Length: 175
Image (tube, rainbow, N blue to C red; front, side, top):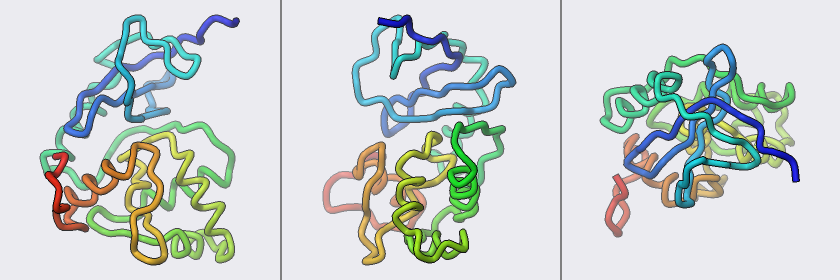
């Protein structure tokens, strides 16, 4: 068994659960994902050993807090997600989907000038390593239904409710 690779970042508490934020050597955000498992120290996650440093992710935590408080609609953070050219192109277009709106996978494929690539766009969405800030939660099915979200459909619904796209569900809102 190989030793876990050390990474820098920290955990961030949000109204929808704990998130893990990882940054590169220049301080750019590489990953931001929800953790659904109990957190034990030392935190080993997906083969990485988290070297916790709250100062490294302070701006991420502040901007997420502002977002959940309804005070931020656009994030202003350096990002460095790992992926190939197509993924980076898809994620760039995801970042252009405005707060409080949704887009279908097919419409996003058209924006990428790949009108027959809705499935490839769906896959790029599914592997998006930076939740919320690269707003894959704003992409919905052609029938208007919520489909796939790595953080869980309950979180996708809560994020879209927060942004005013959906009314509160009949069940109690998560926010």
